Image 1 (cartoon, helix red, strand yellow):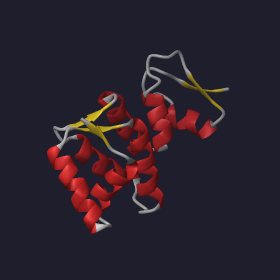
Image 2 (cartoon, rainbow, N blue to C red):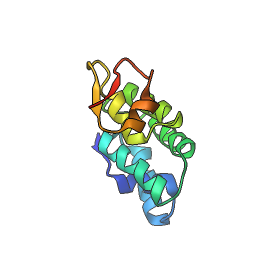
Image 3 (cartoon, rainbow, N blue to C red):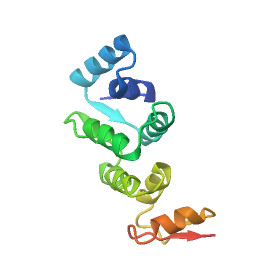
Image 4 (cartoon, rainbow, N blue to C red):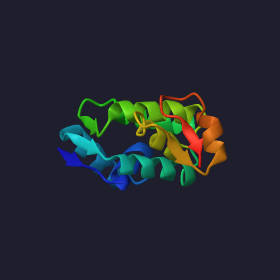
Length: 129
């Protein structure tokens, strides 16, 4: 299994550099791939800011890659939950933080918007510190 960096995943999803796209596609076609959470987080940021994609487009693109039989994530269930919550209005990073905090007593933050948007999501309440 090989891990990939953000630029490999972005090239695969955007096809904005043809030689790098072909190399990424070749890698994803012939290897077992591990995508670290940090790469997913950075990829969402790049797709949102550099490519101006909205939450639905980003989530659809990521789901297409995550659904490949040779792709592995650290915690596919948490990542799936984060994608759903992102589509429902949470910032992606906040959604991922919350998804990975399930099972904890609370997720403390100074971000009142995060508290409001996360109300009722999951078993870990988001609380203002």
